[in-house]
Image (cartoon, rainbow, N blue to C red; front, top):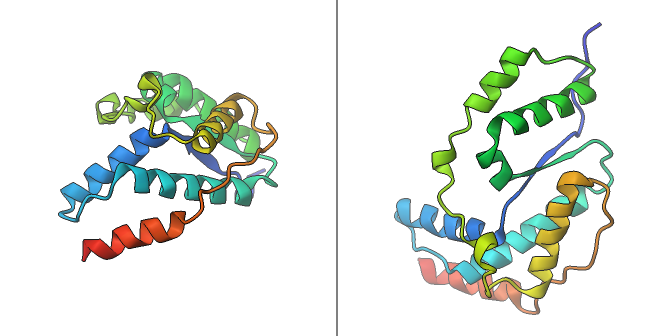
Length: 166
């Protein structure tokens, strides 16, 4: 018996918001675009994570993958992902395939790693709580949601920064 197509079993990546914001800033600079501020990128991160969580909270079968742990222990994460997919699809991934999955992870690509380690003060209380929820969901995917309000005027702030880019 072959498994049918996988319907809505998302893999959600968890990474510290400052590290993501700095990475986005570096990406813009490498693409010869004006680098946006870390603060505006943090607001983008918060908005996007809230949208992803809201759109997947009703999904029973999902997995949260912590970027830092994936970079540190790629084989262990490959085993975890294979197990998740096997359960979702009713198949069994060969161990050689899992080993190859783990070998594709290049820890050298983990360049921005100061946010979680340093307790960056640019992270708002709501952003820290949102990140903490994501980290909790790595081991408890059904952890209850909380309240992570976007600051007043956040959208106008981000849009004004983008308008200055031109």
